[in-house]
Image (cartoon, rainbow, N blue to C red; front, side, top):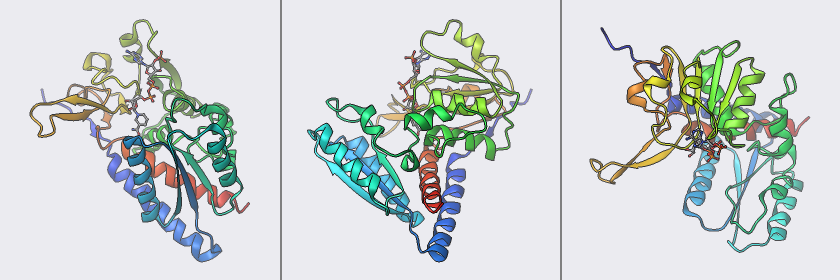
Length: 295
Ligand code: NDP
């Protein structure tokens, strides 16, 4: 019997399309309205991974013609100092979107700081009101969190219909699992969320037409958990040892891609699936923020 390989959902190509669309619309906005969309980032401390993420966001802005304003605070910055920067950015008319890079150093209290980002500048979609509105049908929030929005965009641009489907989301974090579940729900999927306390998880996942895996456990979703023909979106990014590589390691998702791809109808790879979508959706949200600021 021939092995049926799933359609590869190519996040690199889809993200590049979105970035090109944003770039065109930014140019149009500058030409017609004389407005340049602006994104401000706030980085506290010197965590190398966070600094790299912020740098790549600035580079992506530059490529799209979006202005970016970087604010770096020392790792021992006080709650009041970070709050003062956010308050100033909230009032700055040239800043349409504000992104505070998470996680913050442990001594800072994240929630009150996130709440200082006005809902209409919350391009990361982490404001409690934006998160809550994701679950209210017919009242979409101004911004959805970028990684969950990227998952939905991958499904939609691949032509996967969501309404009426059984969707199972692995993980319930406020950054990925919860918002993507709400977004699937308001698109009329029947949604089940799994987490570390779920009993008989494999049998729940086996019922899914659409699986979103976001738990941070390498190769967790195996072939026996997947219904033939299911669509699989793998959000996980995990580094595992691989002596065959020069670096001694490689990135894998939460899904055992090699085993699941022959069973699924469509699947995202890691890397090159959801990952590139996050920055693309951030650019899209920043453009949207600039457009909304004109209303
Ligand atoms: P969190 O650690 O915040 O949440 C993990 C979730 O998975 C929790 O809800 C937890 O359950 C659940 N979980 C953990 N172990 C199991 C298990 N054995 N069985 C079932 N559920 C389990 O992770 P994030 O949501 O922040 O990230 C998830 C993954 O997505 C990570 O690999 C991360 O690197 C990746 N990621 C990728 C992004 C991208 O751009 N592609 C962006 C953001 C994240 P419980 O709530 O019960 O503890």
